[in-house]
Image (tube, rainbow, N blue to C red; front, top):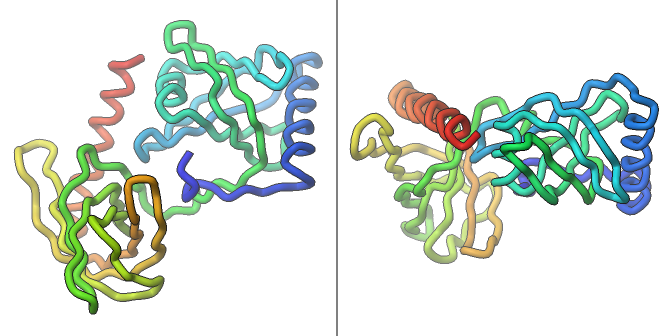
Amino acid sequence: MEPYYYRENIRKTLEEDSAEIAAGFIDIIKGNLRVQLKLVNYFKGLPISYPATPVEMAGCVLELDVHPQQAVALEQTGSTFIKCSYFDRPMLADVKDADVRRMMASLFNFRFVEILAEQRVSLRLKLEPPCDAQIVGAGGPVDGKVLDISLGGVSIRTSGPSNLRESDEVALKLMVPNLLQSGGTSLEVRSTVVAVGSEEEGEVCRFSIELDPHVEGVISRFIFQRQVDLIRELKEQS
């Protein structure tokens, strides 16, 4: 799970928290307790959340019955959030195995977290493939690729060092795809740098953006079309 989706919420230590979570699931299974449990995945940015049923706690691995579309998301994302009424806060776990046909999953490496993605006002979806972008700031233009976009912001992987800092104000030139037709729409938006970080494939800059009616319409259309495509993809794989 990408780190900007959550923040760790350690109660004691990671080891003690993990042991507490495992003991809780053992109580649930052995006591046949009726709890509300949901898994939450962000499948290319689209939240996927269905109820799941704990079946067995084997050592540090939890076996669950899951919805087939959740199994697809688990298989592709490699981790999941768990929201369970037995615990007072959400958890994050890694996926050991996910079987779409058998509708089962195995989870391990549990820790308490705060789900930051739930605090977002608007849905942020990944682009496949990333589209062209250019950042125009005081230091000159920097080319990049749009990784994800929402009505509130955008993430861009730059082709080289951006020399940007948090709170810098820049102009962004974006090519937003039209998923119903070939090509896309060119936009120029005013933005503010929210964060700059390094990832394996290069520097990633995150921006908040200013909307006008035209920009809002173009991005809204893309978000709607992208949601439809992702839901179709999940159904086809499950």
